[in-house]
Length: 287
Ligand code: FAD
Image 1 (cartoon, protein in one colour):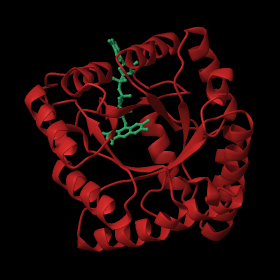
Image 2: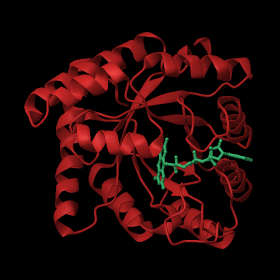
Image 3: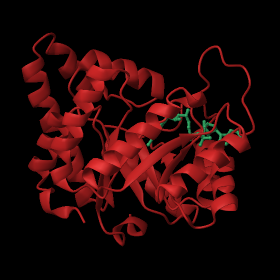
């Protein structure tokens, strides 16, 4: 973990663009409640194939205007063209956006053409070629390995390609086993990689939803945790209290082990992230 300990710990939040007026209002309440935490930045997801493109733009603009916090739009390249990505980068530059989370994304069902980018490393290289050092580029990392990777080693080599293409940092897929993260970082160190790899943290609020997400994205819910969560059934209050204990311990272990910060997947809800942040005593760690 030596590669990670030298980076100052930074804490960030992730939101997704709202689908309608009601969820837009909820998102507004959420970021207003979370802004006083002074996260290092907040990120806003981007539906692959451009499915949320306009809503991502609007959300980025709105959060930046209302909170003054640095906003990092996610940008996924699958199904896109170089011209389209160039245009998006130009728009972000004119809005003084300095940070981007560069992703491949997943091909939306019904979409056949992969477009002009196949993998995220090509997007990172393109952003660097087009905009030089303007953007701080984050990429995705997978301590439990990406579900489509043929092997753990192949996925590590992919991560290396993204770093070598010009990524400044990485945010991980969520996980509940700190050892998966520590081992991943050690493997990166053996490959000579040296960039901050910030754990992505998914609060536990709903077992059915979490199990569905985890199956889709390859994040593992350890058996002991799955069994405990299943046993709560409809008792959401107890499940959330237990989930908060589990994620607080996870975050504490990661920070104590040298993780260079945490990135919270808020799921557009303030309560779980706020509780976790306060339990960890992170209030004063923002810029
Ligand atoms: P890549 O790094 O391109 O990897 C994808 C797969 O291809 C991996 O299995 C990799 O091993 C393999 N691969 C890479 N290069 C090669 C190569 N040259 N040859 C063969 N195989 C290769 N999705 C969204 O749609 N919108 C979002 O906003 C979003 N935000 C995310 C944020 C974070 C922090 C994370 C962890 C994920 C996010 N995702 C998002 C999900 C992500 O888009 C998916 O996990 C997607 O399947 C992979 O994207 P990637 O950028 O990691 O792809």
